[in-house]
Length: 266
Image 1: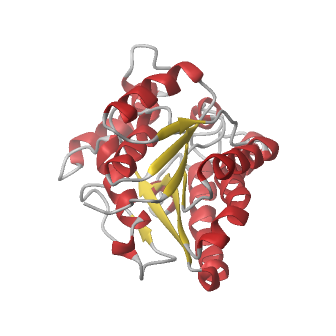
Image 2: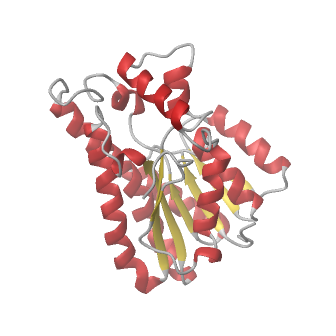
């Protein structure tokens, strides 16, 4: 088990899905965990679970697309807990828009203006919380940033022009940021995921209210059927993040890990 005693972690999109799995694993390793999101009701359920395990946990509302919200998230976390050691940039932008056939579909059919907007929104949603947290990480003498994004940024997948553009760009940006922050002993790594059960993406495809295209659904069904080690749960991804957040990975920065259960090999 990674040891994160005394560390303060911020997890965007921590009120459900992969973010919740990450928060649970960071808390299990001893970190104080601040989750952020837009739903107080969802946050209350996650906080109850975290606190029941004995963890120190908190919720600060915020929209990752808002610079002001992310600045407030960082400032309030530091005010309450003395600083920030770990940032997990998990939440994206408008997921419903990113799944629409006009954005996720064959290149000849997509609306490039809408694709460009999704790429910009999803990219800034990952970068804003990290930029806001840096003034409160540097005085701690080091830290860990983990970007959660799509495996579509590493593996070309038909219909995923938007995903490959923002996820691939984020992977490259994470390496630049890792170089820049190495002098501050702040490590920066990426975790790329594919299908994860019990997540908003899973529900969007397999839930009763699913509205995704048939092509999108068939892609997911193919992944589920072809994943050698089975489909990951949010806590499986959380364990990888907890490792990257801990001193066990102290010599690892600028890396990209793909916990896809053997579906993709790099």
